[in-house]
Image (cartoon, rainbow, N blue to C red; front, top):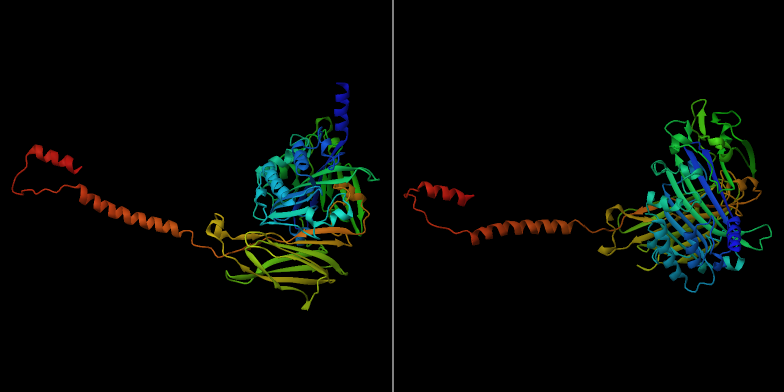
Length: 553
């Protein structure tokens, strides 16, 4: 018994959990809240037999990882669109709808079959429609997605181990939040999770749930790996007034930290409050940190939830502006993108993407596009131009689609010229669907998932993503990198397809039933009513008159 207890205590000791909240007032008047929950477990995904004693790491998720031999898993469920030109870059980029990409272990022989089983398991786990990520909406990117965790160079170069799929039509609601927050060690009872009130969260302009699992180095020598589970929740609110507080935004105070965490902190970006203060935070911060990351310097007010809630106190951060807030444009992000549909009619169309490089130097980028099979992509129409000059791409990976079989997949590696706009355009043909393939609201249209742009920035302006070696936000304060990986998603597109008149069967049924009803009534009267001759000169008695009344009724 003693050995068993010691074994369980050791299993608990190798877990660590950190909860953080980043608050960033945006120049547009919105307020950005990013919750980050990071759990690290000193077990290796390569040794599934060791997944027997669970501590802080959720067992339900661990069973999925070991059953389907997952090396890395990245899932996002987003409602709304992130506006890079108004808000800068988010901590974690995600497209509207649901996005899932997974790296499998090299021991798997049939990746497609395992992917199909995995998406069904995740669909039930997170109450989403991930089971619709079949072969018609799944691709294997070659360059756009590399492992985020520890991986050998040979493994990361094989795209056959990765699968990517997106559901731009997916709606994110309370039923998705509930299973996500159950994975937290303290659920929503205490700590930052106690602020998760669905009625408040889904009143935001932007809402994104994220879950990321990857292997990371256990120590600086990196001879052994650990499992890192990162759960993130990003919300952008537009307060009624410029003054805001946790109570006003989330409808509750913080009463205590999660007792299972090693660190529980809130960081408020007060860079815009310098050099002339325009707002005041209360209570006073525990410390002020000045962070220099590359050529960008930011200042944060740091609150330790454990200290602020000691002795049974409630904690509420409030910001009060001393003068009316003047809305300004942010510094242009180094790279941004815009995408829209071109053409008219229901036969052919096109897509145009504009990629902006606001830096004084050239950049190499990877552009990835996935089109559903019913938008038949014309490869010969693909053009890249910059200010009227054709751009010759370095590499192109193109996999043609197949009707009702697989989507069209395109990856382009090319150079963005300094301080310029590069235009990517192509044409497609709209396919005719079978009447059983239309959704219930067919006239609403069909969604095309976001395009994905990947690059490495030489500057950290508007960049808040944690470093590659850790997803803990506080570690980004110590990041001395000279380059910064960026992945951003464009808008989703809505395409109209030739749609039959689904009201025609209803009209035919109504007309046919009306005709039958009229004919049936006349025929029924003629065949069932008995006609008799009456002598008008013959007077009826009282009894006959009464019987006649009953016959009429």
